[in-house]
Image (cartoon, rainbow, N blue to C red):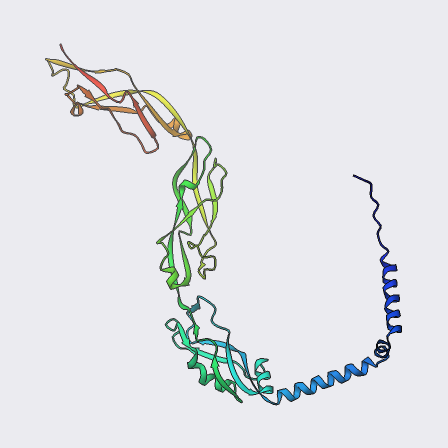
Length: 347
């Protein structure tokens, strides 16, 4: 590619050259020289004065124009809420003196339309033609031709309360390996009152289900504040909650798994001393039990007894399923083997 040199113009000299050329053009043209000598200040005063006189003359005549009149909606009930903003103005086509039209369009004087709704929840629409009488009073001195809006829409609802019981989604809590919740989940407060439009509240569930938003694994007793989420998808909902959050608490313990040999207890078997014909043996002789228990309780438990009931023997295959009777703090109890074979022998 060839080495090119670009020339950057001197803008200051360019402006000076343009002014010089303009002056030369004016010197060569007699008309432009005359314009340059005119008294432009006096001419602007004359033009402004003429324009003002034209405006005043025009406003003294009758005109037809569309103007916006502010609207103020008054409701007689306090326990009512607007689901959407009521109209704040109406567009009116009117004929009259220009000065009167100008003052009304600028909101001078009492140029406001008051609409009284006796039963705002029931009234959904008002036809524009029914407002002509009121507008004639507001726009005195003008002839109201028509209202641009065919109807004015309103949407009000009754304010009410709804109480929801708080339910905590326990599956939303995450624990470190070996740790588990023990006991009941305590929630304060256990119910929340919501206030808002009755129509919207009627679609609420009977319970408010809340979930933990903390993803950290738990390894100690929990005391957590969970924010209250209003159960609606509408971001512009008018419903408010009595509380912003609830306190959730429960105890947490570390659990360990263990396996031990257990002792068998025969129940309802024939008494060996009274039985002269046969003896009942159980195979295998050793039965092991596995379970999960809180670490702080492991040293306070005895060997878990396993009961074999003679009435439970299935003589079709000569087997019996042992039974375990333990306290509630034992979890995931597994016997090995799950069934025992009953061997009947004679003396």
